[in-house]
Image (cartoon, rainbow, N blue to C red):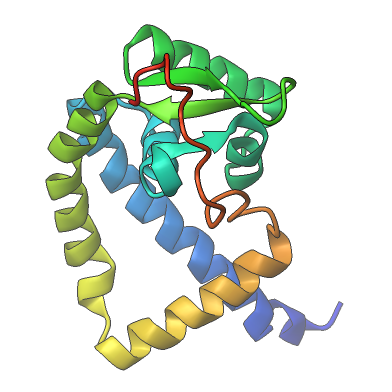
Length: 169
């Protein structure tokens, strides 16, 4: 095997991305734990909070995360027991349901985000000049869209309102 293949910039690019992700993940893990969340629970709360009506269909939540539909069901079950989320039937499709952030879930996010943003600023965005960060974001979106086309599923559709007899979360 040609020795130069080990110096291929494609291998370097993926290696650097994996190393950066691992380093950031380790820093985030302690901070999530301080607030009683796992990395997956934080991701679910963020994806729901950033979606119209603070909700997503369960299938869209699965498409946006690295979880299977059964994995999303287990996480939502656990978070529902903890009062962070609730489920709501989809009025236009009886087979679907929504995961919806509760006021308690939004409060947990409000408590977690200041520390999360400090870590991001210190160890990620603060390391880059604004034009470098903008170019990196563009590049990461291109790669994300290619390898994970469902990553934004349901996040741009208008939220279906809660039925009149059901309180909004």
